[in-house]
Image (cartoon, rainbow, N blue to C red):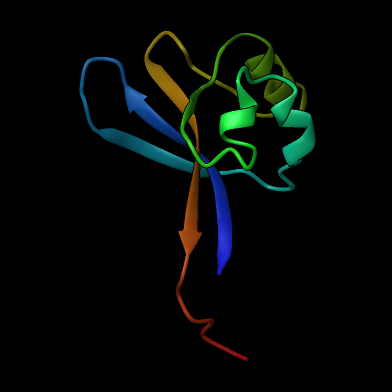
Length: 86
C-alpha cells in the first residue's frame, strides 16, 4: 500500500472536484508544523485547506495556487493498486 499526498482542487462556484495534483517529495514532519491539533491526526490523513503558512510553504516549493477561482485541500489517499510490472 502506498500513500498518495495531493491537493484536491475545487472550483469555488461548484461543489465537485476540479483537479487532483499529486505532491512530490512530501515532507510530513515539516507540513505538520503548519497544522493545528496534529495530535489527533499525526499522519495527516484528514483533509486540510491550503491557506496561510502552509500555502506559503508549498508556494516556496514551486506550487501555484489560483485562490481567486479555486479552493485547495491537502489530502491523503491509499493506492491499493497492484503494480503493472514487477
